Length: 327
Image 1: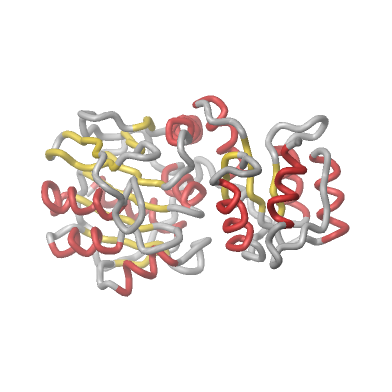
Image 2: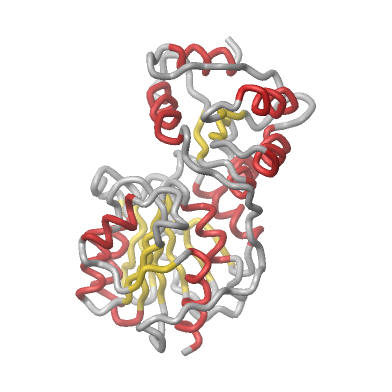
């Protein structure tokens, strides 16, 4: 059974999901989106004629709709290519499900969650100047920056990292929840899009200015000492591995007063407890505001926990980090 038919069958099994159309290629998907005005589209990457990337680009620039990229590319090269769909406007990515596999329910959950989410005609930013923001915490130096995010996070991360110069004085640790096998490709994708050096973190990596270290898909990224990171196979925290909270707690214990913690768009409460510990230890803690978040769960949880010093629009965060790094 071809993937399109598998996905159709899996979605039709749910009484609250109605499959209104099936497209054989990207061009048909563009045309059906215009005619049927669906609440959400699942899009393959590789199709004859107009591929998924071209279709996403045209849909998001003409008649935007939530899109989930469903892909079989789990290699580093394939994941990097697929992640470009996020920069073009797709909301999420996932591995192609099998008819009786565990991803069947994941597919239905993503469709329910993302259907009807507001999307806009907007091009991703790259190498733009950073917007400045007047805040109460200016003048803080930062050797280390920790960022956690999930759904909506890749685009937010790109908006933060793109304006930062290669001479940026801080090291950045990123815990971004991704499908298994996508973290190396995610790091490669970011590395192609920004001036900083981005790579998937390895156990024992050093903390270096101008470097971004990305947590592997199923391992915690933690600060082992002031100058070195480690990878941990500890149990999931709040249901997640990697965990932003565990990362922040490790920073709080070893580098709090020279650090910044940031919670971006995402589903759930990951990051809140760790960010609170970081704040109590003297770290500067930020959260993305609701207006610029695709999903406000994670920032909201951190704010409600009293873990946040400043709430900023995504366009303001890069400018703030530049001023902190250069103080």
